[in-house]
Length: 132
Image 1 (cartoon, one colour):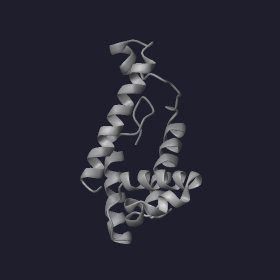
Image 2 (cartoon, rainbow, N blue to C red):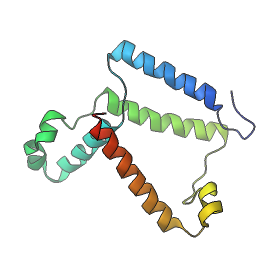
Image 3 (cartoon, helix red, strand yellow):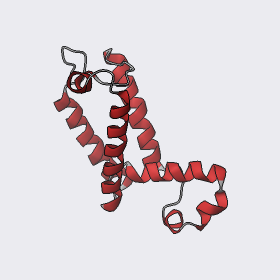
Image 4 (cartoon, rainbow, N blue to C red):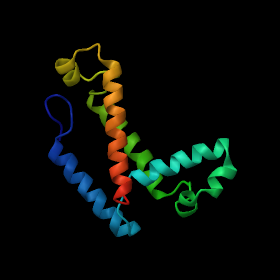
């Protein structure tokens, strides 16, 4: 089940992810996704500072900022990934991954953060555009 470097076999992990996807549709009648959960989390955070503004936004009237099964699924992904990394011994905190440091240098933390932010924004935009 694990590789020599302590990480999970990607084929086993992929197959287990597929089983979770099938079970999600079977039990909840919906596909699991992440982008709506991030938007709901942003709405919940914004409600702390201006609940009246959130209540007036058309988007948050349609997609209410609330904790639901998909939000809990995202929490489960985070906790499951943390448990998997800790149990395999592959967990480590680092600002610049080894592969990035080999290509661009270890001192490029700012560039890494900027590229990660832009990449995340593009991925989130695409996911929301596709209504996912």
